[in-house]
Image (cartoon, rainbow, N blue to C red):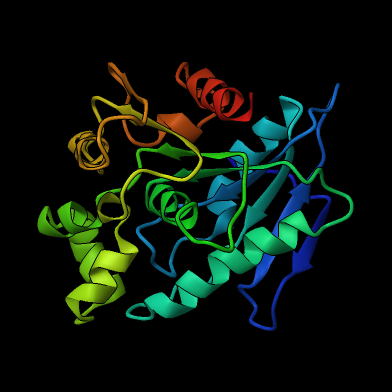
Length: 236
């Protein structure tokens, strides 16, 4: 399914991938903006259109929604690491959007939103990782996405890998919830479990029986309400 076009798209930098799409809430609006970060194993073949129907559904639930794009250049982690906080900051400075953001990321986007909350320039109400690659070293060691983590960071030194890996950054500075399908064959639930164990077990992890990788972003799925509930939890 193809989502209707957003209300507007806003550039936050000169590169064609430095922009975000805005969707206004339907019905009674909530005083919050959900910043959606799409997945796709950090590769250029996947862009924010992948999250269009998810973003439409969140707007239907009353959220203001900003779906960000970012540079996805194989081997160029610094470009991506610069874009995600810059996009978050631009959304927060958008006068038409509530300055009470929560981050929502799926798969590689789950890695990015979790990593983002450790960055000193990022200040948000909370974040939700859906089937996220939140243990980057384990994602690499399992060869997920045909070696996607290695394709992203390449031969970067270990200190760069460590700085990019949420599982090695300690307890998060803000609210974080993990949601993962027990039947996920793209990013197995052990990746979220490994992150949770690494940071001390204080981050809630909801494991959904029978749920695969994509159901968490599919509004037609019986599991999509868990996504909305996780957002509600980090915003309360």
